[in-house]
Image (cartoon, rainbow, N blue to C red; front, side, top):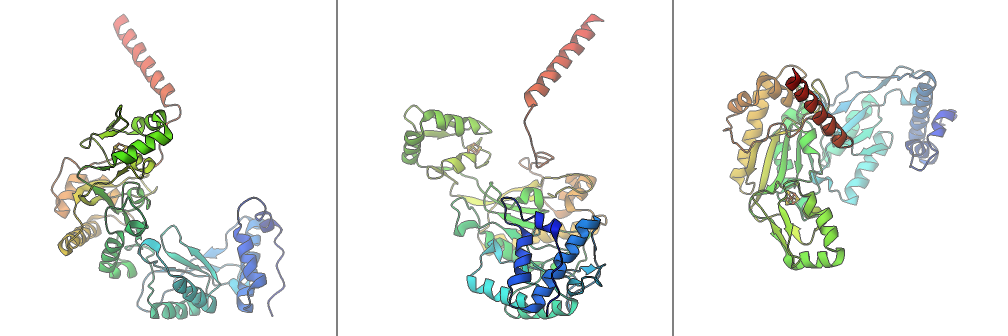
Length: 422
Ligand code: SF4
C-alpha cells in the first residue's frame, strides 16, 4: 500500500500558468500508474521536492554507482533526507545514447518505456542537454537490471564525467533539403570508434562530437562541441530562377529586397530587373539565410562536404568559445574520407589528452598553447581559410550599437580636438 500523499502546496503553484508542468507529470505517476512501487517513488519524490522548496536547500548528493565494466553513464543521486522519503531515497539517472539523428520507431519507445517502468520510476527525458535519453530515478540494484535489459536489445550507456560524451546529430538528409553530409554515418562512425573512451573516463575533461548537416547548425555544434562537423558545399549554390520569379511575384520585390538581399551578410545577392537572382558565389559565406527564406528557389550546391571546427564550449573558466575552423572543407563520401576524419579525431583527442590540464576543455587548451602549436601537434597544415575566433560569445545583441558607435566617434573627435589645441 503506497504512503499517504505528501502535501505539496508550493509545488501545486507550479501547475498554474500556461505551460505543461513537470509537477503534473509526476503526480500522474503518483495517482494513475498501476504499479504501487512507482506511485510510492513519485509520492516521496514530490515530498522531498516540497521539503526543498520549504527549506530552500537541495538534498541530493552524489556517490558512486556504475554497472559492470563501465565507468560512466550513471548519475548517482542519494537523498540526505531518505528517512523521511524512503521510497525515493536512491534516485539515480541513467544516460542512454539515442540513435543518430534521434530516429526511433514507436516499438523501440514502447520497449524502453516498459523496461523503465519495470526497473525505474517511469520518469524519462527525451533528451537531456547532453543529448542522452535520461532515465531518471532508480535504485542502485535496479540500475544494473535496467541496463542489462536494454543492453540486451541494443542500447548502450552514454558518457558522463571526463570522457568522450554522447554525440548528437541533426535530423539530417532523411528529412531536410539543406543537408550536405551523411550526418548519421558520421555520428555513428565517430562514436563507435571511441566507445572505449565513452565508457571509461580517462581524459582531462569532457569531449563532445556534434554533427550538423548545414550552416543552420541545428545541433549548435559550433558553440557546444569540441569537435564540430558542419555540412557545406564549395561550388555554386543552386538557383532555380523560375522559383525565384514565382517567389518575387508572390511576395513582391520590396519584401525580397528587405528580407533576403539586404540581409545577406556579404552582399552577395542582387535581384535583377527581370526578377531573377544573381549570386556572387565567391563571396557567399554559406550563412544559409537566403535559402531559409527562399527554400524552393535557392539551395546548397552539388559539391558537398564538411567543415571541421574544434574547441567550442559553453561557459566555464574562460567564458564561451566558438569552434575554430581547422578544416575549411573536406569531402565525406568514400571509406577513406571517413578514415581520415576518424584519424583526425584520434590525433586531436590524443594530443589534448597529453597536453590538456585537468578540467581543461580542448578549446581552452588551444587558447593557452596557441592555435599554431595545436595544428602542428595534430599534423594539420595551416590554411588561410581557417577562421579563428569568429566571435567570442554565442549571444550577440545589437541594440544600442548605433548609440555606442556615435559615442565612440564623439570621443575620438574630442581627443583629436584636444590634441590639436595643445
Ligand atoms: Fe548571402 Fe548567406 Fe545566402 Fe550566402 S547563404 S548568399 S552569405 S545570405
